[in-house]
Image (cartoon, rainbow, N blue to C red; front, side, top):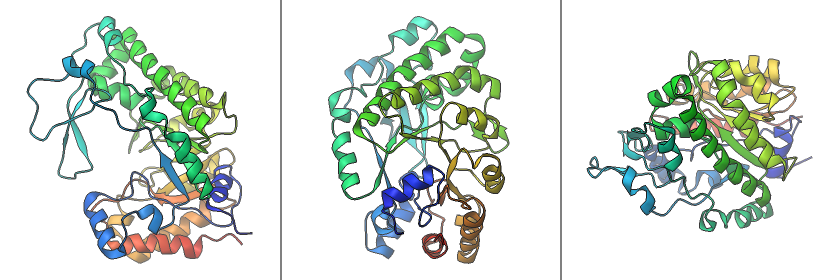
Length: 360
């Protein structure tokens, strides 16, 4: 029986067998150069519409400049600097315009717990940031599309992103009260955002922090369990107090195998992206496919940029036959597609999913 796009995503995410494998490309789909190629080749402006993704992300609106952050912003800014008006950081874009480098951390010079407590948190809860969300979700549902509330970089990446990576790692070891206060303040904001998304009726709540490298966890499993697990559980609980059936998606690049059982324990339903360069998607399916659905699994470091169209097709078929067996797979590249990805490989991915991704 043919399903609507939303039914396909919900069925897949609940580890059941849909009519066909759903698809998408994460992180706004394409890097700037490839986006220009897409527009020229496809004669369209929105990849999600042209390629008919079954899911759309819903976001809070960007912030207005906040005067209370001025004390945290240097008087002398780098050339072409951008101000993050949520967290007060200063960004500079690299050669790849979709990649930013933080040139200044708003709390990089904090010395005491009082410094952390005095920091003005982002105004995510101001009405202008979220009052559109319910209407956007309703409009997506009228189109029979699945709605995903986007709240990645949930805790860890925000904490070190505002404090500085080395500073925050040292805080967790030697300045524990500073780390606790910062994470608790971020968690409070995230819980309130999760409630807003749940009240708006999103189908999937997207959470995540990059905690893996290609050689294993970025921080130890015990450290993750002490600092991040209980707070992530609080965010999930906040959403499910309003919508018990909301699906919870967790993203981490790299090898995060050490914490997969604990992600399941606190209520994660969907794991993304299952980076194939450092995790075997078939093995992850075998170990956890009775408890998790999987979004992603197609390599963006090797297959998509450097393979042939036939290589792309073969990888799609392999994922469908292994990870997709019995349902539970939404296919997509493990990250956005960079400029070096050939257009023919992009077409090969979508054509292969459409051709081979039918359940019989």
